[in-house]
Amino acid sequence: MIEAQPGPGDGKPPVTLPEDFPPGLKDSLLLVAGAVLVGGLTGLTGVAFLYALQFGNAGRIRIAGFLSDWPAGAGLGLFIVGVASCAALASWMVRRFAAKAAGSGVPYVEKILRGPEHPDHRNVFLVKFVGGFIALSSGLILGREGPLVQMGAVIGERVGRWLGGVRNVWKPLMAAGAGAGLATAFNAPVGGTIFILEEVLRKVTPLSFVLAAAAAATSALLQRGVFGMGQDFTVPGVAAGPTWNLPLYLIFGLLVGFLGVLYNKILLGFLASGGFLQRIPPMPRSLFIGAMVGMVAWYLPRDAGGGDDVTAFILSGRGGVVLLLAVALARFFLGPLSYAAGTPGGLFAPVVALGALTGAAAGIGLHSMLPQAVPSPLAFAVAGMAAFFTATIRAPLTGIVICLEMTGCYELFLPMLATCLGAYLTPTLMRSEPIYDALAGRR
Image 1 (spheres, rainbow, N blue to C red):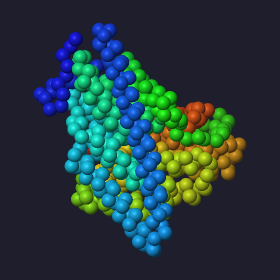
Image 2 (cartoon, helix red, strand yellow):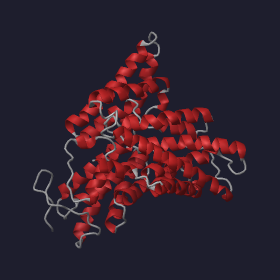
Image 3 (cartoon, rainbow, N blue to C red):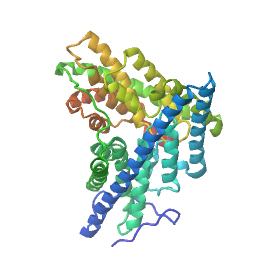
Image 4 (cartoon, rainbow, N blue to C red):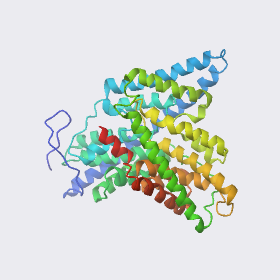
């Protein structure tokens, strides 16, 4: 047995992420068992968080409906104050108890796993769960996957230090926990595994693959087998169209790539230290952002939040071009604005919803002009989900697999590949940095 790594607060020597299993069979089996334990704990945490968010989002909509019967202006004012207060409370929790819990958390997880540092996870789990629940339930345009990835990473690190018998065991288990968190967020175990290899570690090794897959599969077993949670979206029959229409998907992907570059620039601009938003003190800033989101959530209650209701609405075949583009425009700015509030919350779900909105609008337009080439506008909506993800985060395989697992539209694999090719090519040629790399640089 090799000596255990010291925990946080000790004289911590630099550590590296091992790429292969330890030589002893016992230690190797211990690692796999640890990954299964991490996946189980992360899956239970994720299911609890998702159920809490369902309750919170439904509660916000019920409150808006109740207040709509109040005298003119009174209900709207009280609702805006409530949303602003929730944003301010979640932001205060981060500043007061766990600065590392701000935003997505993915850049911080990547920094720890790729570098020699030890994490500072004090209070992160609690703040991510409670603060994330408050922020996302209030209607801020943020994703559930950010809190779940970081909570899974905390679980993996803690289990690794508890096992303690294998050198650097906490790092591969931290990676496995992060992947299980993403897998639970979207009920996408394959996507969660690929996310760790493609985006977080950016390499495939025997150890990282086995542990990430074991943790993600265990979380899926709990989520699907025990709690009966199926895929996120049900999509009616979607036809990809003839193979010769692939250039249409490629061109659409190129345009989405440009939108992704612009989206990242807006988000980074809102976070810039010299920008107008960051010159506002944190408490007034979060109150202002919450009030802006509250205004939209009052008039469009189901169009606020992470975007699941928006995506489900689109994938049911509803919505005209004008409505889709109007909602997309609002969320295009409110997403980065919400992230600037400094609360817990991710980026994945909002950009996936934006992809569905822009893809559906493009699909409807193309269907009206070229019905034989585009028999189903929803094909572009599904492809757009993966494309916008690719354009902002620059992880095309993760985006494709997650969106396939969320929708079950496996016949769209080739169109999605063409779309993501375009969405990857545009920001690459424009020398636009992937959003997590840019955010990590700002740290």
